[in-house]
Length: 137
Image (cartoon, rainbow, N blue to C red):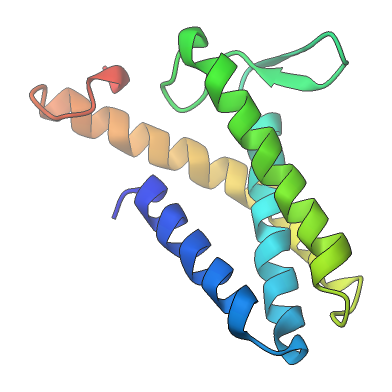
């Protein structure tokens, strides 16, 4: 399943669980929010970037998306990261505070996984030129 579809399904499932679970589910949700924050950090650390006027990292390209799409992609990353951070601070109060910090150790693993998936998709696009994802050639 493509990464974006899996991410969307996972986000929907976690969102639904967050609205229906008792506070005892905060630890699991804190881990999910920590992984979401780690994924955003991995993107901002693992792909070519520069600093914007505010001094924040700003991707120049990412996963085959060129500079023309970065004005849209970067805000998506920042909103996702801010939402995960806000949930950790405001929503997961009964979870141990150290728990989501453990997930930040996934950042290097996620960087490798992102690049491996990008390489796999580029190879697929090379072998099957008619494949839908022409941005990866």
